[in-house]
Length: 290
Image (cartoon, rainbow, N blue to C red; front, side, top):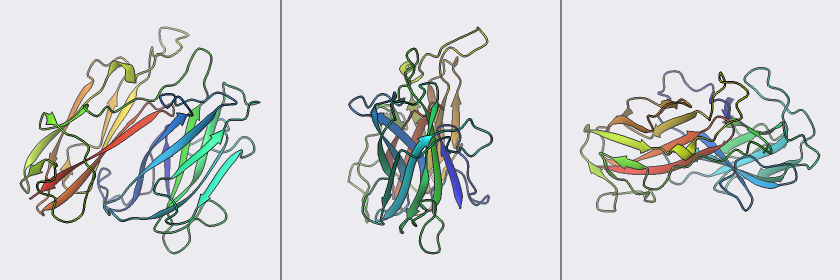
């Protein structure tokens, strides 16, 4: 079973012969936590309610899914996989087709230490339902085991979600609005239209506010967050999958190139932004190859 750990690292056991950025099958690409009533906040405080959502991308427009998710206090990390350091305090199990988006709404126990972390763990099952153990899927396909580890809010450090604004993403330096993908002929429906095998630029303009200030015990510590920007696509070739934006970098405009596939049709793109502390944002775009 593939393991996807979000917010701390992105890892898995995907086919090494496939490009990391290529979405050839259903994949979980990112996660976002929003405090109830304050969606800009990624870190809830003890006693507060929040919702965690996962981004499941797929080349299919008609995919269904089931999932199981649970939340618990996180143990101190010792390796790539997180573990619960206390009792599970929220869980959900959703049968195949019951929901379009894997998500869990929870209340952080008021007795938890604000300096601790939360662990959300479970499994996403494309085209199937989770088993009773909440860690595996029915049928032959194993699904994707997921983990999202996040900080709790501190009095002097409230983690905000970075954002991918609607006008932050451009295609060949032109505005690239988000248009719902469709099946069949995609020409004339508002998508950028390109020729097969043509090359294009994809640009993301980030904002200074996407990197929160951090407590700085010494000058050796970073003054604010670093970010990771990821690009995913259903077809064609992207020059690179990931961008790292260091805490002290002034280069907030990032561009990659994409070569269109030889076949015509709709190509879907996903952009995922992480602050590596549990905050995240994601958005989708599409291009018509004709």
